[in-house]
Image (cartoon, rainbow, N blue to C red; front, side, top):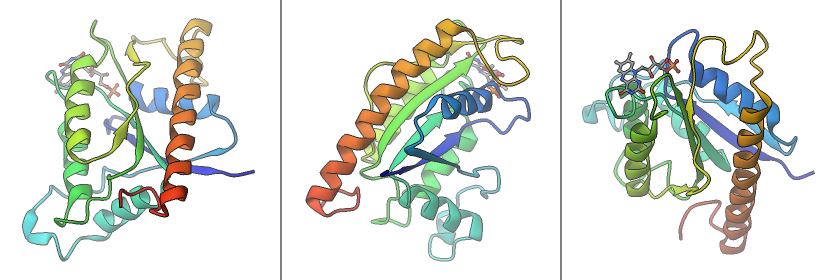
Length: 195
Ligand code: FNR
């Protein structure tokens, strides 16, 4: 069986994060050919361009986790109508040094959960803008804007059947997206990067 390593980046550091629960729920629903790796963004320092050529181990780890993945999934909350700063910090780290952008060419999915009525729509849109610039291949549709509240996930992280169906549809499309780009990369011999 061919497997695909998927790096999961959760934009919340909160212990009881809804978005981490959502990430874990997606992982549970995924086919066995996807092997997930949670990327640690909590250990990253604040980005400082002075350190581009002398990165801390946490930065090296982030870049290698992303570069070794065949796909990325961002699971993001919305903070003040955008993505959280911790997530933008991770994107900036991965984008540098100049010419060594780790995000380029990676098939990417975005989902998010928030108690707010718009369910992270604005955060996701901002994230899409940044990822377009970083040359990641972001899945367009379907979109997942989850409005959550306490009790949405049970003790085991399970959700209602309706939500599970929605996530399954998203996952099916995402898996096809990853495979499409893996085939493309194999054909081009680029390992997922643009020539
Ligand atoms: C929020 N929250 C929020 N929600 C939203 O839908 N739109 C928003 O603009 C904001 N802004 C915002 C700013 C800050 C600083 C905080 C701390 C929170 C609420 C947010 O969605 C909620 O706290 C979620 O529970 C955060 O996601 P996690 O940590 O549960 O994954």
